[in-house]
Amino acid sequence: MISFTVRLRFKTEDREEIRDALRAATQASRKEPGCVTYIPHIVDGDADTILIYEQYKDSAAAEAHRASAHFKKYVVGVLYQRMLERSVENLHALE
Image 1 (cartoon, rainbow, N blue to C red):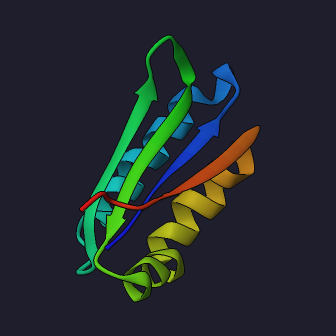
Image 2: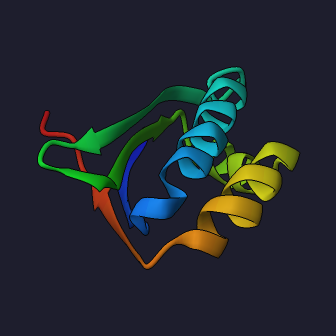
């Protein structure tokens, strides 16, 4: 299982465009066969910061996600174009 979080910060004036793109990306990502979980969050107290928790069945599924048309359209085409900051945390589940 591949798990990670992505934290993105945006300008306040881009808030609606970001949320619309994120809703579309979420809907499409959840339909991917290798997607286990894709949950975007607005950070409490900071409405311009988004945290996305993602899980994929394996690294091939995560790569397929990044290669998908919806990732290119909504994530690369909108989110990456508007973001001020981005950080990724790779996670390892305790067993």
